[in-house]
Every structure is written in C-alpha cells, then in structure tokens.
Length: 233
Image 1 (cartoon, rainbow, N blue to C red):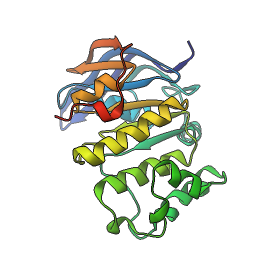
Image 2: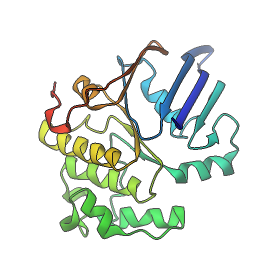
Image 3: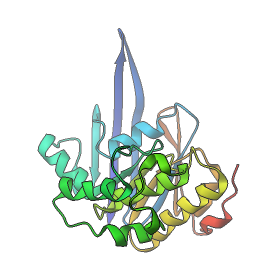
C-alpha cells in the first residue's frame, strides 16, 4: 500500500523560559493513501503538535517526516510552500477572512495555488451553494466549518488534515461536517483528523492513540460505521 505519511523517531522540543520541554518523544507511524485516520488522546498529549508537523505548520526537532512525497524534516521554505499547496488544513476556529464573502474565501485559494477554482462545484460538495455571497458573520458555526473545508478542497489536496473540526459544533452540525469528510474520503482523499470525540474512532480505518508524546495504540478498524451513526458524547 502506498504511504501518504510516514514518521520515524519524531521528536519535537520547545523551550519555555530556561526549561526545555519534549512534546513528542520518538514517534513512529505510517498512514496509507486513502485512509481515514483519527488521532485521539488526552489534552496535552501531543495530538495537535503532531498534526501541525504533518500539515507543514511546525518543524521537527529530530527524526524524519515524509508526507505527500516531501521530506518535511529537510524542506526549505520554498519546498515547504510547495508542500502546503498539495495538502489542505481545516482549523477548529475556521480561520476565515471576515471581510470576504464565502465565495471569495474559497477563490482566494486560486491566488495561492495558481489553479482555477470551480467555486460553485466546491460549494455544492459542502451543501452551501445558496450562501456564496454571505459573509462569515452571517453564518452558523457549522456553516463556517463547511466553508473552511470548502476552502481546503479548492486546493484539490492529496491529504486533508483537520484539527478538532467538530470541537465547537453541536451534534446536528457536527455530523454534517463528519459526513462531508467521510464522503471526501470515499472519493479518494486521505483524511487525518485530531479529535476529542471518541465516537469518531468507529468511522475511521485507522486509529492512533497518543499519550504523553508517544504512540500508545495504533489500530486498524475493519468495521467502519457511517458518520450519522457516530455516538456524540
């Protein structure tokens, strides 16, 4: 099976004042192309740190990280920008530009990637065709998150990384977002999600449990459930 991401002996350290903290402590993992992978674990375990490194938002301290054909542990700034154009990232707080319409937030990707963006088609995928001319402030939290996903899709990403995509949503809106992610995965996009929603594990092919900066469990799931059947708790 072709690999989307491969991590060997990943170490991430930060310095807080005079104290050095080790956030990731020699992680090894691999994610196959086309997988729906969920990363779970307690707060402070290192889940988001791992996702930020995989998504090209943070740098490693030691070890190697390969993703979408790039060695992220060796990329210079130019190569890292090229990598970021090949992947999508969805944030918990949406990270939309408030003074741009929904359509303009998505079309901004054409400037970044220099690719033509079919805004109508992308909005159709997230069921927001009627909201193209609205501003983020006129949308619900669930709609904002779907715009965030649509913006990421405008890059036609090989891998879609999501950091707590349902963290601020109620069950109804959260399951709409999960259904979109599941549909994208079924269409061939590799999806990697960090979440506190334990029920989401059952809709994933691959479950990675992180505890204290280490991989505690690495599980393949052959009994995947539909997004609508996820237990919301």
